Length: 123
Image (spheres, rainbow, N blue to C red):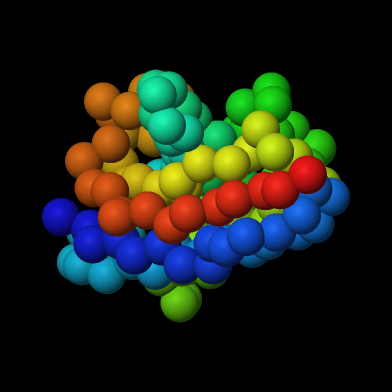
């Protein structure tokens, strides 16, 4: 099992930027797809972005396309989410997750999850 730890969340104003980090450990990290999900109070956990092990394939939800960018550094066992032009609607707990099945938008596809990092955007 891959162990994941998120960091980089905080409180910022609309229009600002944040970069989230996901640090991975464990012998099964090689070959994994890493994704970011987010969950706001009273809402379902929703897909944000995914990146394949090869760093060739990336996927984004329609709501963040053009504003967020996912990247990874396999040598550092890390995945990042650069978030620009943040909006109040982006407020949520952000989680990173790992799967060996390839990129997926479904929560059930992921075996390993971090504990989450809070991102709050004020107007």
